[in-house]
Length: 310
Image (tube, rainbow, N blue to C red; front, side, top):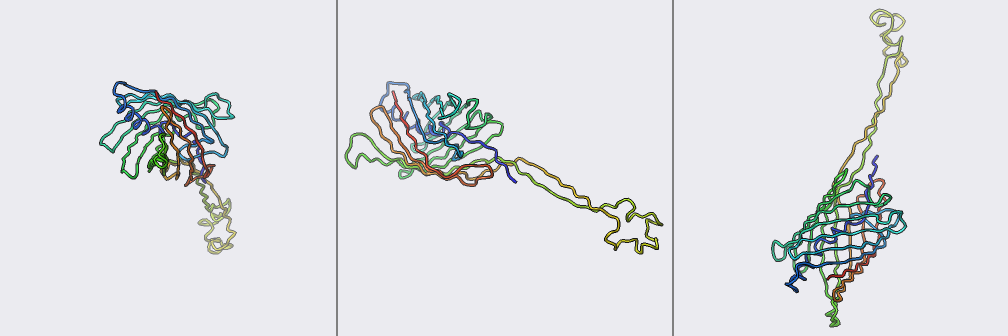
């Protein structure tokens, strides 16, 4: 028998930010060599929340404002807050992240980040033991496909490891109609793997025969073996005075396994208008290798993200 330890929450914003700020900082630095850094104000809204592909039976739509500072050197810091609809807390989750983005080669990028999380007292997202996360992302541009691999180490009472392999490619659309405003699709296909924590209960039943009082041990000579009323000591008699004793032992062990957790397709439409970036997106997640107690199911997520850079 297996019992699932629930660890459901919002998709970590730092995971979404990695790679985004590295490209953005590089673009801004190339266009303006006089400034040392830029601010990015963001707002995101979605019809439901998830945590590395996992979700709950109850939908939790949310809005998430964020403030980020990106320095020319590649250092960046971000603060974001999540407000779920129909919950008791004013702020359900608060993330504070410090990151560093740099290039090893022309097409190879690396992002490092550390995040600290705090949660509202009544938040339904995750248990309070999740406090910090370390994230490392490497990305390579193959010209036709952009591949990234992100590793996350979630720190808490039970530490977890997640990896996300993603392939994407930005497809500009405005050249089709010779539009001035940059518009494009950025489809992404990803596979998420991570640790699953649950308890396993094993029950073992053993039965042994036990001589009852006045049974085979007998009261005659040599334990009744020479008793003339019990030839052979009564060993062939099924009712020889023995009883069966049954013992049931139950043991519970905590188990952690690393398995594929989720397959995902995401199709964002990216629109740039001056200092604004608009990104409505559709995402379809298919959770796999679910264990008992996991209410996750395949479903669509609709998200709108707006950013303003200055």
